[in-house]
Length: 293
Image 1 (spheres, rainbow, N blue to C red):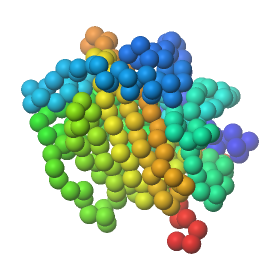
Image 2 (cartoon, rainbow, N blue to C red; image 1 turned 90 degrees about the vertical axis):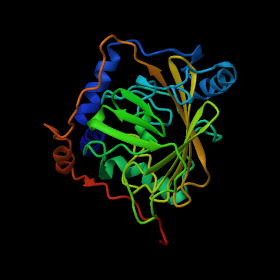
Image 3 (tube, rainbow, N blue to C red; image 1 turned 45 degrees about the horizontal axis):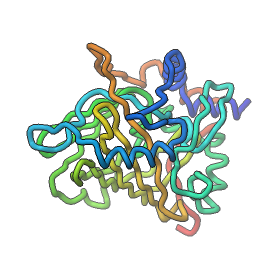
């Protein structure tokens, strides 16, 4: 029973509602003609599409990614997983560059990961910012807005936002730690490259408890592969937690629904997930301290 309640708190009522809504519509099968059934094959196909697609441009000459977007893979579990009684939908691994398509944990971190959901209340259940890279696969639609020198990435979940400067400027000082880290972007041809540092290590990558520490460093790559699809790649390293850097991929598909807009979703209102987790003996997640540190 405790395990059941733990998983319930990890998913949250909000995620279950979104999953139920998503199940009412057919899941997208392709992005720019690339199958989404296997993320590794989608990744290879998308890399080819990048070579030939010429994206539209903004007035200042960079690729125009503005508009509303929908995630194609969920944040239930970034590794391959089956459906379960808590409305978790079965899904493939979006890890693409390790031999077993799993997160390459150090031994101590692997043991912690096995018990993470049974020990802690999910940060997403507490309506905390989803962090990066979860930002791209978190519940709810996205909006991208561009102005000269900036890309603004809005997320409907808990009304989150990221402001990504694309002009040359240093990261903030190492003593400043943020839920979504500190992002600095640049354009490499048709790709928006975002360097993310200064994470506080207090979020998870998914509801399954895949995690990182405050040593996290991510390089994200956003590339349009046709007018209605963005290929997303995140190269992730954390020497405190992982044995090696690794890569996950996803896709964003344009939402062309007439009159569509993001809701101002509060998340905290009526949320009983934390209370349910505490009643099940779960603790708030406060990050990890690796052995010997």
